[in-house]
Length: 287
Image (cartoon, rainbow, N blue to C red; front, side, top):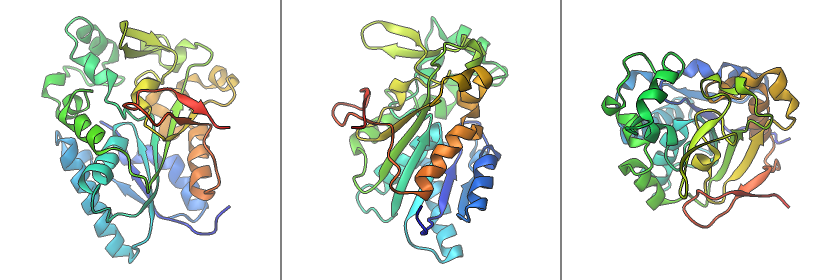
């Protein structure tokens, strides 16, 4: 275990809130690791670039307040990962003023969100939205009015900017995903435990390789370390809902994995995403 502790910046996801990190915060406090909890709930319908700029201001202000100017770690959930990536890869991609050791994404839509695209599909969208009311979207939700939902579609300006910028060689990227290894419907009951994804060859289909909202193909990032949980499929029989997308930041196994990276730089991921292509490539197991 390392004795050097880096502050951890926490970035919550879409329509989420900072207290989603309470379990991780407890673990950070027990390990005497400082944390800076970024809250963007009050930004309403702001575009991702604006939220990323606010994250930059938050980090700079908090650095000044704490008189700390060394490396930081970033832990993000869902689209919060792409907000952080937009800051470090697009806004700060050339100057690299921010020193970042780890960028850890939990269930991230790195290649754009299949679910956001599905919301807008004329054939599938209305039924999908009805299934998700009260679970993932509010009543009378209209994705056409949601800038985030539009900018996280795979063909959006935001996702094009991220793809053009590419990952930074000075940051260790770690992606933590879950899979329904036992085909348990209760992992995400809205879709009987499956996740929608778009296949290049077959169009829309459902897969157990996802967390109910984000399929693995959305998350692959060239060269990033990858962990697919649970390590023991029996965990899905005991607590299947804990491995669904919404609950991932509260999942004890996910938090254990995050803490392993933060506390021990020698921690190796279970696999690495292939470095070539656009990121939508499967991982290879660590040798």
